[in-house]
Image (cartoon, rainbow, N blue to C red; front, side, top):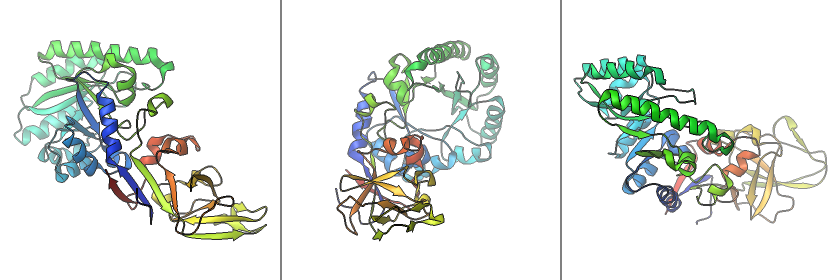
Length: 368
C-alpha cells in the first residue's frame, strides 16, 4: 500500500469482495442479497461501492433517502434500489428515477398511490414495511387487512416485498425477543399473502441476522455493516475485513516543556518534557471532540500515540514522546488494526458512527 502524503480514506475493494463472499456463503443459493449503501456507503463512497457490488451480481440495493438513490442511478446502477425512508415531497423524483419506496403507514401509502396514479403508473413496485418490535417505522399486525384492501382497490402499485427489521440480532442475550420478532413477521406475512393472493419477496435479516438467525433468511437478506468489515462481535469480526483505512501524516513536531499547554483552552498542560505531533485531521473530518484529551489515539510506526488537548476543526495533536518518527511520516487513525470499532469504543460509541462521520473533504482512494 502506498504511504499517505495527506489525509486519505483508503478503500480496499478486495476486502469488500471478501466480506460479500463470506456473507453470501451463509445463505442458500437462491436467497437474494441486498446491499445497504446508504450514508455514502457507510462513509466510503456509495457510487464506487455500488458499481463494484453490482458487478458481483448483488440483487438489490438500499438507501435511506431518495437523493441517495438518484445519485446511484446517475452513477450507472441499474439494479433495483429500495428507498428505506422516502419523503413524500420527493415522490415524483423517486418515480422518475425508478426507485422503489418503503411504505410504512397509511398516510404515505395513500400519498404514494395518488402521485403514482397522477403519473399514470401501473404495478409500480413498492415495499411494505412491518414493525415487529424495533418501534421505529412500519405498519403493525392489526393493519394488514386494511393495507391489503387499499392495495386491492388500485392497479397503480404492486407489492414487490414485505419486510421488517430486527432490533437486537447481534445481542444473543436478546435471543428470545429476536425469535419473537421473527415469529411475528411470519404471522404477518402469512396473513398478508393469504389476503393479497400472491407472494412478494420476504426479508428481515440485517448483517447480524444473517450470521445468527439462518431460520430468518427468507427470500432475501440485507447487509450493510458486514460488507464494510464489521460483524458486531469479536467472533464474527475475525471473518470480515474492514474495507476502510483512515490515514494521515505528521505536519509538525514540537518539543513541549513543563508548564506548556497544547491546543485550545489550554486543556492539556504538560508536567514535564514531551514531544507532540500535529496532524491534518480534525472534527470537520469526522474525528469528534470526544476523542480529545487522551480518549482517542492514533498509530505511528506501529505505536499508539494518544490525542492530547482538544480536537481542533482541522487538526489534532498527539503525544509522540516515546515514538521514533519524523515530520512527513504516515499515521493510521483506524484500519485493520486498530479498527474503527476499537477507536469508537474508547468513547463508548460504535463503528457505524465513526465511519459514517468521515467527511466528504477527506480524499477517498481505491485499492484492489
